[in-house]
Amino acid sequence: MVKSLDENMPPLLDHVGWRLWRASRQWKDAFDAGMRERGYTWFGQARSNVIGFLERDGLAQSELVKRMGLSKQAVQQLVDELVAEGVVMRRPNPADKRSNIVVFTRAGLSMLAEANSVKLAIEDAYRTRLGAKGLRDLMAALRRLDDDA
Image (cartoon, rainbow, N blue to C red; front, side, top):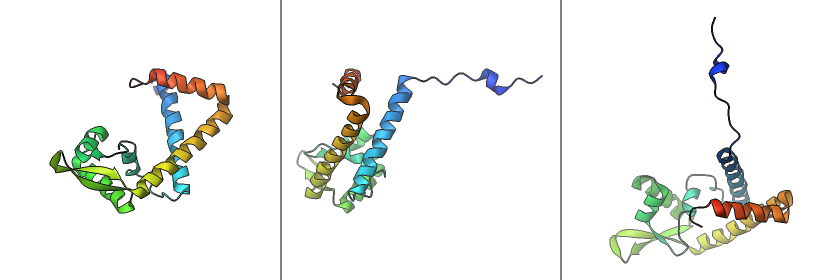
């Protein structure tokens, strides 16, 4: 007699990692959609991921490579695409003539302001779903879980 494969399958757990991952994906999907609605049609594409790694006053491209965990060539291409969008530009690094600093342009700073509006709208939707106290409690719990906080 042949055993069914289902008999040897471990159960799929409903665990905190799964819930955090799903919530994160839902947040990112809502954020990307909100940014696309505001005319940033490239949100949701790989280049948009660069934005979260940049410092507001600029970041050496070599540090961006480290933070993103991608190859120099991949980061170069993503930054090139953001330069073409007019969101960032490269400046010579005064501390190292061999490298560049990636900085936001005026258009990039405007994009960041739009991004803040989208983030606040998502939080408002969460507040509606969870209640004000529920959202405060969620934020407090997430801060406690954050190693960098």
